[in-house]
Image (cartoon, rainbow, N blue to C red; front, side):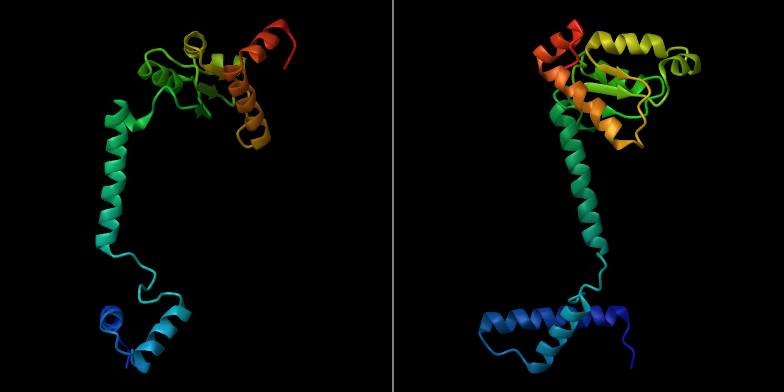
Length: 182
């Protein structure tokens, strides 16, 4: 006799309730109930059947939405971005997203690094406003790097590490300006 998924779930709930009642009352748990619990544990579902209930899914969505809205109200900025965060923008075409972030941060861009796969000449030829946007970003203190291939993780890490070191260590920045190279 095959039991439906709903009947099996009900049977699992009943078993959990009975187990709890036995534990509270201090009475021994029946052997049949123990066998059912052992087989559920061995199957790996332990009565849950690996699916989240609709109630649980709604509750998790609500918690994510509240966290998102809380971050936005806390910083006053959308998506919880704030000027104190280190933000790495990868694959920027004309750097407009990075410029929008620095605009949100009242022109404070020292913690923003924007990278583009295109070399400088290709980016300027492809996007007529790329040069102006890059200059505006650099004026806010943001970093602009061309020719960064994100598929080469080591290259991306090197560019980001160099930028954050420069931004956080004035001696490193001064050494780079003198031509020391760090």
